[in-house]
Image (tube, rainbow, N blue to C red; front, side, top):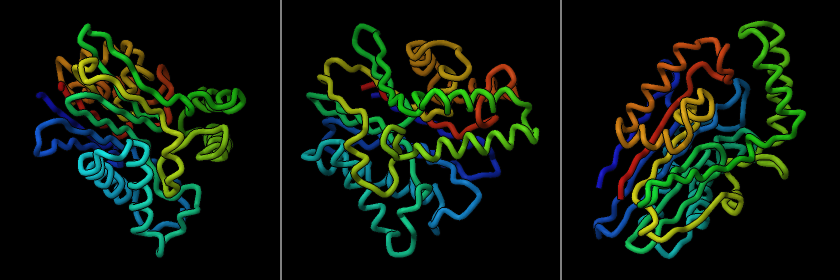
Length: 281
């Protein structure tokens, strides 16, 4: 079995808000992977005393432990339990009803001798490779499929010069429009403090024989496909197989550096936290 992971902050002066882990039970009959992309909070108060890395460490740790210790639970049940467990650790000190209480995207996969189960919530990606070389991407597209008016506002912001007063003003309007759709009906969802979100994740199960390898990527690493258009998900998987997660992250950093102001490839941040887990089963 080959398992590799890499993670790197988008800004060396800020904590990395991504989380990645792999667990292999002592039985040797399977394993699990967890990948979280913590949502960067706004500058104003969000009602919580804790940082996003604090949150992702606890949620990620709970997901990893439950995914191997509780084979009787489905992945949505594991996510719901982990969200509740994490919320309980700061329910008495923080306002967990705040819409920007610490939260994260989630990729969770678990395999044993018979099956591979998976769960994806928000805009991180899970890639599954079959014995014939076909690569399937499991994606939660709700953040990409925002109402047309919101997407048009996003495009208008990205067309303005970075650092300009016009971009800042319109960017605030766009941010408010997106925030109104966060964890709301008809919008997009992340794992925060409400365990009910687990029922909204993209989930599935495949025979173990149908999966030879899998990879999980936060959107900072997925930029290779979705922002810079260097290739499709199958090409991305081929790069991971050849050069590993570190190779993919380094290539993304090269592409970001070549377009520092997002002129050719518009994006919200020049560099983003990036994390990748690659596993050959």
